[in-house]
Length: 93
Picture 1 (cartoon, rainbow, N blue to C red):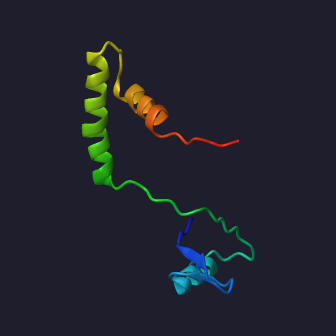
Picture 2 (cartoon, rainbow, N blue to C red):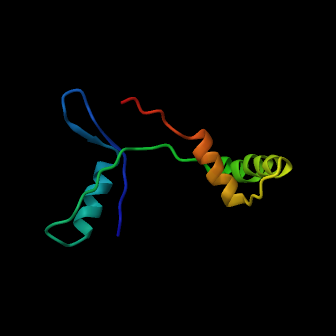
């Protein structure tokens, strides 16, 4: 079983959780003395509508444009091309 909630550290260094009571109920419902808490940085995720637009419009148009100039592409290859060409970070040494 898994439980996720958002949290942050306030200016005084205290952990603030949304739905703290629900979290405590979930933790006690596990009927165990120890459990693991995982923390990860919160990231924005594309909505279903954004994902449909990306795959239906952006990838399709990009794929057609690449095919027109002589590349042999499918949707997945086009997606990988877009990631490598437009989604990179310049790292300064």
